[in-house]
Length: 130
Image (cartoon, rainbow, N blue to C red; front, side, top):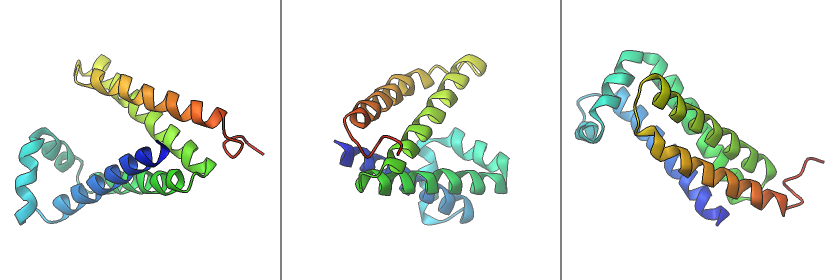
């Protein structure tokens, strides 16, 4: 099951890389992908080059979490927990500040993933600090 979470984070890293490519090369053949989330395109474009830094940072974090989880390393688990926690806080912030209730979908999903990682860690000696 940990390997599936590793694949989840690898997918996240891939989507971040795709977003960076779409932002760097507007008008390319892949530009039609923005139709899936047109609001995201506008939001990223309004951030300018900060969007590239943000997506690069998130993508790198997801990549390292995927590697760490795949190799069953404690730092991979901790990084995944941090990423999921930040995502959950972001979803809750969107719900309460922007009244965007779509974030309520991500909260239980992230919560379940966090609980799963914590439960796996409780049974693993490598998860505990030395």
